[in-house]
Length: 356
Image (cartoon, rainbow, N blue to C red; front, side):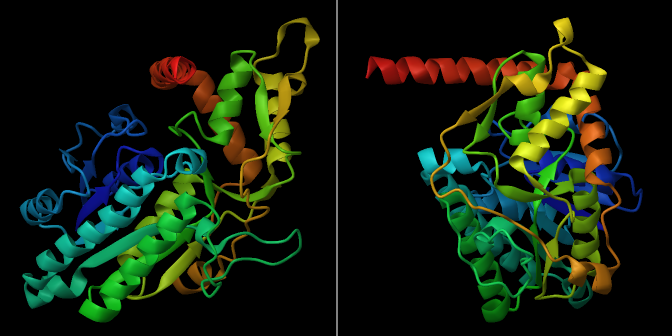
């Protein structure tokens, strides 16, 4: 079985590549443009594996994608490449339109041209798995309601709007052209190798640097947290066993407010890496102005994938968070250069803005 993972040098994509490569019957090709969030060191455990290949290419380059599909005789595409940071989408939405919408459109066209030329047997087993987010559904009140696969789309940010558009394109290519697709919408991921701009690694690393731990508003916004390795397992199952034309919600069943997440990280660090003078990490918490259009709450009903495909998350939030903190404590070689480059680019951006 030959897999093509787009965005395989990113946080979730690298976890998917590592997971798939553990099966010697799978051959994995990672196609990544290597933007700021792409990091090949996340693939270090498999970079020399006999069943792993890397292709430096852009999903917006249709001819390059088609050539990779042909050369590696791809059976399953797992399309993960996307711009994903909401704050960046608010500041500069153009990149999100280009990668998430135009890139998906070009991926679909390349996949369709490739699929049409396959033999009947290979055509029957080909799949295009589009990976999306629960943010396309908008937000929920603070009650017991949940997102299902039938929840209407109501995106709030340029990011979620671009992902909603890409979801619609994938469904249209299936209905109009009969391209065999499956879709999945996941809740918030966390775990090793996550870029430090996201909440959990940002809080961990700011705490280690004795810097403020920023919390939007009052920290009441709620997310359903999913350990990335559980998500990688779910994506492999959807890609190989999901019903063509169907979508599957993937959630961790671990709702926590942002404040609860930050306080949990502080408690773990108080135990594993205590501050001097018996000070607590939660003293570093700093409330900042809320994000425009900030969704109140996300919650996933993952009963369909559990009942139809037999998947359920293995990791509890407490266990996964402890593993995540341990990973960042033990792997400064991975995040140190990223953190340094990120701080430099932010400083230069501030200097340019002040000059204007």
